[in-house]
Amino acid sequence: MTDTDALLRTLWNELLDQPDGDEDRDFFSLGGQSLIATRLIGRIGEELGVRLRLRDIFDNPTLAGLRTLVAAARERTEETGARTSADAPADGPAPLVHSPLHPYSAPLALLQERFWKVERTLPEAAFFNQVMRVDLIGDLDPRMLLSALRGTIRRHDVLRTTLGEGPDGPRQTVRPDFTVPVRQREYGDLDETAREEAIRQAAKAEAKLPFDLVREIPLRLRVLRFTATRSAVLVVTHHIAFDGWSRNQLVADVAANYRARVEGTAAPEPLVFTYTDFATWQVAHRAAGGMDASRSYWLDRLAAPYPDLRLPEALEGDDGYRSATQPVTVSAATMASVARLARGENTTDFTVLLAVFLLAVASRSGTPEAMAAIQVANRRWPGTQKLVGLFANTLVLRAPIDPAAAFEAYLRTVRTALLEAFDHQEVPLEEVVEALRERDGIDPADLLQVGFALQDAWVPETPVPGGFLRQASGLASGDGQELDPTTFGLTMELRADGPALSGHVTYKADRYPPVAIKALVAAFDGILRAVADEPQTAVGTLITEQVGP
Image (cartoon, rainbow, N blue to C red; front, top):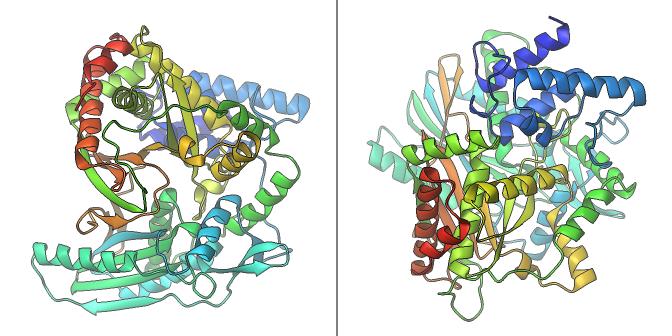
């Protein structure tokens, strides 16, 4: 076995949590999903200097197939110097290096620019606050933990930046000296109900307290102490510096720094490059035409006209920013059937769920085509997977519906559309929308009507000396009627809940009454259970059977 073979086997086993890699075990049958494939691609890029695409994993879903793929890519590298897969787009991921020229100042990354514009327009709003709950369980040293957090913030420069306007546009300044705002309160040994209510109220208050990004770093803490061995920490971040992927990375780095301090071992090695390095490279990459091919793809793919996806119960008048939620659940038994269907088509659970959601929207809106916005990690560049920061992008996926086709065929259509979208994921959605507005005169609201997300599962518990850090969910949003800047009329968000899924539909409360969203959820549930049992069912039959509230 060569060193490359051994490395690939190690990565395969590690990321798929397998004791030993079976040459012919299928990636999807081992629990592989898009985010695991993204991590695998990133690690291969870091270790072997080979850049692969998501479709390479989907089309070669075994360890043996991956070995052949990497060997072919390395052979092309030796012959041509190209580090991409055979037909990767010209504006695919490029190597990143640390830039010592501007260690304390950088332009905003492209995705950060959108949040900065909103902040400048509505400085008193807290639309983009994110509240992450971490329970501290065991005999942990609070001062050592705070020191570990400071070390982590020093490691991830985006967490100690302030923003401002420069002569060439907005810039972020990395603060060598910084203060982490911390509010602490002793609550005593409350029972579980009272403890959870205290946490919920604190989280609600933090979610509504805006950041001053000009003067404050985009992170603060609220600590709720209950006993000597139990506390809850609310890590409040601004989305301009933190995305969903960042949660696990932040906790892992805090744990590693804490372990090093308690045990007297070496701290984590410095990052090869930082988020501000990425931002500097990305702005230059776009200016040099590096995103032109992907931009052209989206302008062609998202050309008007668009289907009208409003549900039949839609209300007249101004949509406003008020939002409400409707719960969604998918049983473990149904998810087991979804997983079998996905494996049979060399695709992921997400692809099946998205295809069903598109059909549910089409069935309720009565349109021959459905489209939905999805979120992608957008961390294809080697090394970015270890960074805290804002990389996540939004893509709009459209998939024409053939009523005569079986659901299996429609699933393949959605799979193809997804893989194409992943190949061109680096262009910010706002940039595409603005270009379409200038060229075609589109109304962005016609393009951005519905969204769908299957959130990445976070690591529930991370061991540290004396106890563990537990990421927790379940922070309520009060009465379910909150101000929200949601771009879409409605968005379904799901997350793994053991072998099942749970989540909600967030919708504009001034556009839809609750009955409209309940009918959509019922359609989603009905179609999902139908295709889980009979994936050969005609799409037209699935849609027709779900029409009506």
